[in-house]
Length: 453
Ligand SMILES: CC(=O)CC(=O)SCCNC(=O)CCNC(=O)[C@H](O)C(C)(C)COP(=O)(O)OP(=O)(O)OC[C@H]1O[C@@H](n2cnc3c(N)ncnc32)[C@H](O)[C@@H]1OP(=O)(O)O
Image 1: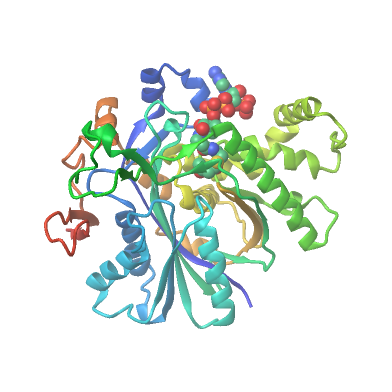
Image 2 (image 1 turned 180 degrees about the horizontal axis):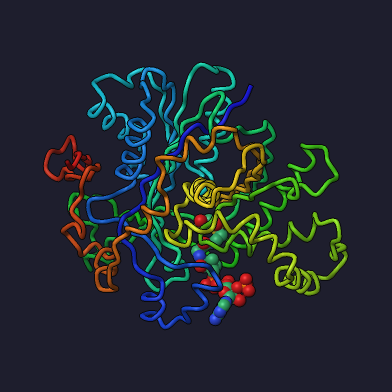
């Protein structure tokens, strides 16, 4: 029995800052960002948008476009690392909004939960849903991956920001892609990128040593939540390379093959925190699993790195990248990082590219290399199904991204610093964050959403 993705929808932030504008203001060589990292635009949420809004928009579109009867949906599992509450999951908000739109109690028997493991939570959610549908082939599950990749101003992550969501319908006999039951994992607990609870001492804020109540906070430490991560960029790259390499070779063992696995993949879809991360990180796997590898494993660290650099600059590797990785990069260049959604956006970008260029990819196998900081990689593969094109007719990925609204640097900084109070663009036919409760003590911080006609 085949299980996989039957339909995909997306909702990406509709405003963007051109990378050239950021490069100019930050005094960075634009060529480094455009040609070195593959960045063109970075999207960011408007004042009325958050991760619930993106997820709800993608999900509403999926339900309407695919005429899904919610009685058939047994699970809505969300992948996110941008939760807006430490207890109430985004999936709980989504249920409320979907019931508002599609009828009271229409999802009352649906199991919902959020999965958090940095950027790999969406893949974890999907693997779980696939297992569920394998056991219950008449049922359907939906995976939503929603995130806001926000980095500190002036940090090395600043040019990799992005925001949006994807929703995927998981069924038996899927139209788009069916996954094989080989999932290889590599895990190691590290601090490459994380979003810790932080504190500031009350004394530092009030200048007062006596721990007097401060806006009803009785603790001497004031807790701070930030969307921006603590991270070490180059170390996170090393963790990404180590985990994906180990998961790849575990996958090879699972398949019990001595052949070069990536040769059997028409396209390779990786987690893309920025467009060229995959091509920059994959050269090691390319060299190690290649039939004519020049790497023996006995080199010292410097020689090993030099050989990898040589490999990554070779014509053969460039051709490999153009054939197998480039289609997934196109959307990433125009969006930025979607954290949990990035790998699925890479899949959608690949499908849209082949659809728009009229390439037949039915029956070909795609390889997936997922990564989440902290850290974990999963490697798996799937086969494109004969009816994949019928699931692409309503997608319009690149046309939609083309319509993104350009903002200037001043507007970007105001949004980043939360100084912008009014929407930059008037919302239309989409969910919006209406207000956050500030008075009622039993509902303090409750977030309310509404549909903008
Ligand atoms: C966060 C997640 O989503 C989870 C993860 O994946 S973790 C792994 C990724 N980590 C992150 O995304 C964390 C946030 N990002 C960062 O810290 C940084 O953006 C980064 C570490 C990813 C990149 O760091 P950086 O210091 O800006 O770039 P750097 O590593 O020097 O690479 C610049 C590239 O541009 C190239 N370049 C520089 N100037 C150039 C020019 N004028 N023309 C063309 N290319 C140029 C360099 O040669 C280099 O490419 P190669 O190594 O492939 O040759």
